[in-house]
Length: 403
Ligand code: LLP
Image (cartoon, rainbow, N blue to C red):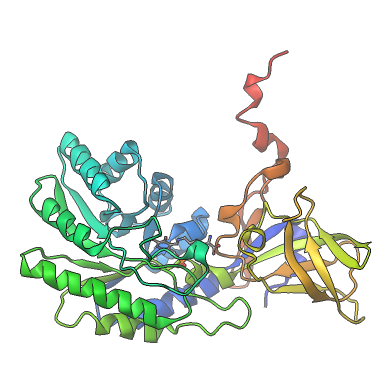
């Protein structure tokens, strides 16, 4: 059990706390599920890119799925070997492509014909061969929130099957390109197995038709997206997930690569915030806290549910309240009509499932410094990111002040 009160006293609030042992358990369960094949669990750094978190996964043997050269640098710095790093994303700058090739990562995941052209040109200029995979958009409805659904043709991601085939033929015939993988990712927070299975079948068939024309791939990259329980969602069990995927690969000698983010970190993370005061506007009761949408954006952006626990001595009856932050936006809330007991100044709220897309989506809106981050491992806590102070926020502007 993590002593949230002690951590809030020691490190102050707002604060992110991560249970590293939980992250290890999630990683090991997923890795184990794929043990019938060679596999790489490439942690999707975008979920939580704190260097100590990435290092933790590096030590467990994970790879990294990156969507910017900044993330590639983080992965390398944290000790992920280049041969386990992939670089995805629908738009990559020339300098990012060049650096990825120079860094000798496992492959660049290409998302359009135009991009394949750029990668070829840049590799040629560098006198190198770039390993690539193609992101296929299998046109499958993943049945998740539209903002995090990516596998339909009206989403910007990937290419259709015919285009993918053309791209593989081009890559095979190019001296500067080496097609090694195939990739799909149909969405995030997936709680149904069927759409993933259907997508995998479609993509595995494409692999077979490529083999028929002598294009032999090595990596079958199934993306990320495994959902977690925020409230009461039934989720996909890693074992069932792996079995479904492996079932589509009969007769193919491929290493499975998966890119989980949320599954590994979301329920390892807690966001701690203190009550400033309560207020009443007409019928409506608000609890105003010291954390805000700039710290944890998911409720504001997606109306996402996060369980909120009040650590208070009050044993009075719960009422329905809106839990809001100090930012000057009506959208600045963590929950609406949420049952909590009467709260006092400095009572602590623990917001659950905050380990993925929490800190990484934080901003400095309203000149608010981002929270500190703390790791808990083997019952010991340690700071893994300092709280941002005012001086940090103005550091890149100050020199331009004129008298
Ligand atoms: N691979 C690719 C190509 C992705 O686009 C993503 C997530 C992942 C892997 C990792 O997905 P995960 O396993 O974490 O579901 N900010 C949103 C989530 C955006 C996900 C973007 N792509 C949220 O807070 O729910």
